[in-house]
Image (cartoon, rainbow, N blue to C red; front, side, top):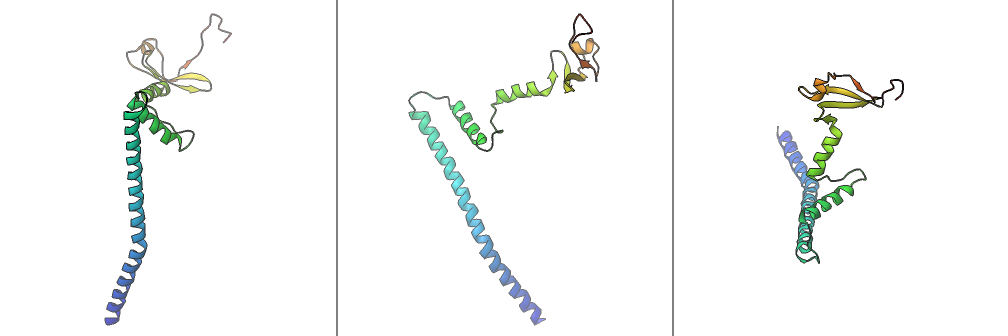
Length: 145
């Protein structure tokens, strides 16, 4: 029983020592990294304030912040960028495939516009468009496109 107690005590001391030697520097490194991030953000705030108060011309603060955010994102890769709330709303409308004026949700299939669903009570619904219909060009001559 004494051997077990000494072994357990020895294991606990060894484990505590190892944890302190490994985890201690990692915790210190993370704390230094956090401090570095906050220092960088503080620097950003100082530069922003100096531009705002001392730049030769008056600056649009919102545009300045958006440009900084966009710069941060574009530095990640060529496909990342920031969209303002207005631009994001416009992008959602352009890419959603919904046309409220006509009352259609559409997709593209094999180069043709295909109706996903007409919205109830809209011109598309009144015209009798149905899910699965294709929208094609209309000409006076049915044999030409």
